[in-house]
Length: 550
Image: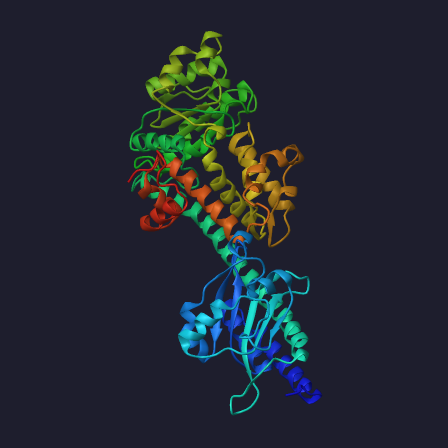
């Protein structure tokens, strides 16, 4: 039967309608089913199937099959190996079409064609049918990139079911249609992969929020750590010490490098104190004022005590009575004022400048310093008796370099907080940026980290993400060396799924190590069930880790 011009026009009209249909479909399997249906309609094929290239590009997997023929044998369809050592030359028609990119048109499969049809004969025997004509079309896009192969069987030319060969004129039309369909199918697959990636990145962000919430709930039912972010062993130790001291009025000495959050910890202790939280939290930096001004600020004065003292003024010590007095950088307090502060701690009373009688005070004193007070004592710059009065309950805050696992959570907190402060929407932060910042020495600790993030938020576009170019040059100058670990996750030729699996395995391994192999705690930190975690440990060969325990 000849293929006429009228048939071509009808086929083209059909092709337009088909293209409109498939472009609306987003599900990859339903899309392939529509493509196969359309191809059979264009060619009057009795049956057909579509083979899809697997992620590792090692074999073709039978994905969709249609027609009465496959209602019997669809479960018997086997993958087609593309590896040279698993196929004999080019004798398999499916692999040949996939590798060559050429259409194969067989008029009679039971006559010699140079291809090995033993598998086809096996299927014919299973369903008690006979395959005659066959059209095998590679599913390649306009650049020749292959997605798979479409195989069409037995062209029915009339209502009596007479079988004929597929006309040569159909080959170009079907191949063109297949190329158009492949573009749509590949776009659908990319959209699906992107959705998975977005979900995984969103999940990773939520994991950080869950970890912080878990920390707050785990510390105790009474201690509220508010905006103190951290789940590292060093910070858990700090939280444990805070929990023990909040219900007392004991004097606290907080030691730590500049920028580690000493005032935040002091304020948190005050807010969690059942006796003092309803009264004032008064803070003063002892290094911020000269001696005379600091004395009048702390101790207050009476009218006429000195030139310019036109009225009485309560000092910060008196104002903090009933609450908490926080003295930051206590190591910079002048020796004269150290003696007066010692009397306040011993006698629980303060005498304002020019006053004849002391005023009783009831307060908790929390002092903080980044200096080594024992060295200051040896150098005669700090009173030893005051040191022992202050060092009743010491809390040492870790430097950020000693709690690097907390940096991602801190970064996400600062991004959200600062973006809200400036009325700006930031949708995320690139993993390479997280890795790079996490590798920095950050001598300024949390204060330095916050400044870096504030700058990045201001530079990032509205509704955009924070990228490497938004970081200071002092950091990005070493970016290639620092992000090598992240880039190593993305190997040439690997699919998005392979890369994400490697990333997932790395995150699980790190969390498992952070929780000393405890599967229950690791699962909770990751926001997954323990059963799901066990399955992932098995999948990524992490169950035999020496740290893993139940």
